[in-house]
Image 1 (cartoon, one colour):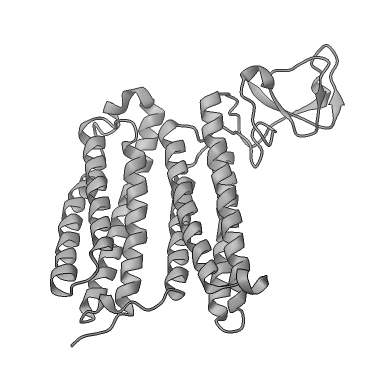
Image 2 (image 1 turned 180 degrees about the horizontal axis):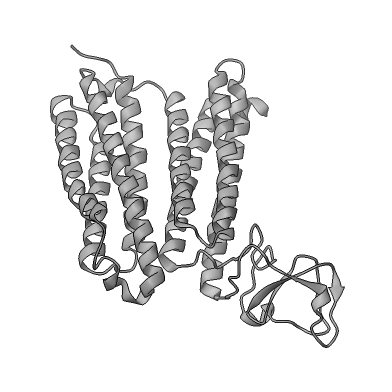
Length: 348
């Protein structure tokens, strides 16, 4: 039985599934941010003190003659109160049974926001489970290729770090800097998993080149990372604008945008042209498999369209999430292509 489970093929399957789930986490995070649901669960890892959150605000109101368990949360006088111990309430609220939640002072229940954030957390937990299984399957390489096992365990530990960062994000009332770090760590995990997948894939000699193409691919990755970093800075500026104007006045968010926004917007055109030049060389000159390049071209076009919509159509619903998710997919696919090119047969 162990021989059937612990195979390279199974390990590859779980790596692919891990990459897929990490991207689902990125998508879920983008939806949370787009809908303003980040504080839908104001505590962590539970949600209003429950493993399965409430569906109605009445469930968070003080209820007489009701059993409460230690750690359960209610909203009392517009503040979160946490049960100190297991007890059974009398007919009136008694302060000695409760203590204020001290991480922050946010105490608003919105059913849609709560369940959006809760689903995001469930997907995150699923991601941790999938990477854990991949780490267990990597033990088959502990003697023959220990690097594979070590790096898979590193990926698992990174998922745990992500969970801790997620808690701190909630405790700090959605600090924009920490949200950016949260995103960057997710991209690093994706990159590590793609690297591991490449290491256990059979050789593919269809990516032959003169060595320069791999260097061009690496430069494009660096330039894309620069673009993403600029985008995160613009996103932090928009978060500040949301605080000032609210979600209903999206037309005001970039009314007097920072210089970095205009650099980010113009640089996207340069980056797109460089990528399409790269695709032309790879496909026409070296006859590489077209599918990866076509997918990358498609993602770049979607990113451009979503950026245009945000700038000129006042952030229509879904445009921010599409922009963020496609940017992360672009980086993952770029890295995969670079890995292929880096070890391909060099033709003089």
